Image 1 (cartoon, rainbow, N blue to C red):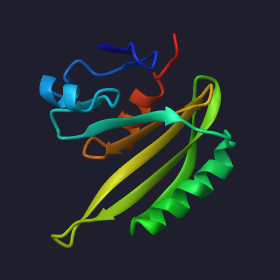
Image 2: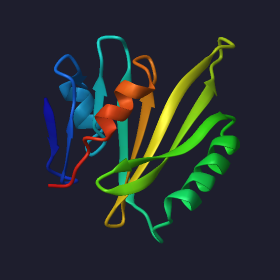
Image 3: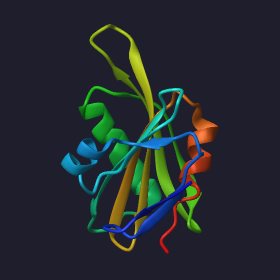
Image 4: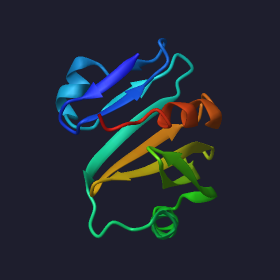
Length: 139
């Protein structure tokens, strides 16, 4: 299934069993698409301009600093190639009130001065989410 975002002009391919957030949720969070798998994995976008545009290594350091400020434990920081460019990624553990931690991976995709920041819960595993994110493209 190909999702096409008219507002931000991008496409991403999702497995056929994934679904988009419901109508009212989409209406409330216009411009921030969300998708869910049957195994409770999720992909959520936060999109907006970024200036100046950092290189991916610099951006990775910025993301690690911000994660620490929010009390998240950085488990890994790396990069991913999407659209012929390297982009920063970071896997974090987010503490929950229950004492457990939610494991998420963040992808900071930057194209033409716009950051497509993706947060993914890892119920499905890193490789499935990475495969989805690698299909991101600007038509």
